[in-house]
Length: 90
Image (cartoon, rainbow, N blue to C red):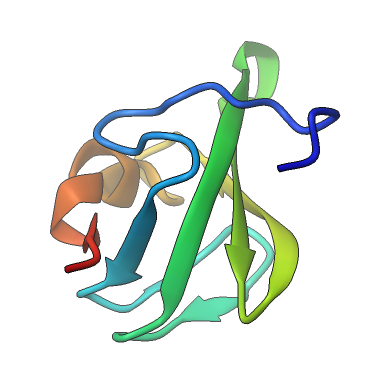
């Protein structure tokens, strides 16, 4: 993995492990993450002044920054229940 990207775990997500979306969701930038989408998790970062959470992952062979906002009116409910959206790939 590219060491310039943070390799910080988040919730149940562990860097360099594979996950699959089991419940579709939309991120802060309006990108959809459909059921069946595969991720290789890289890491995470959090910006407290904006409640901004970034999840870094390889999706469809490309590195992505999945931005989320930890507020009730945004992606807060998804972040609070992340294991209901992303599960380890078997």
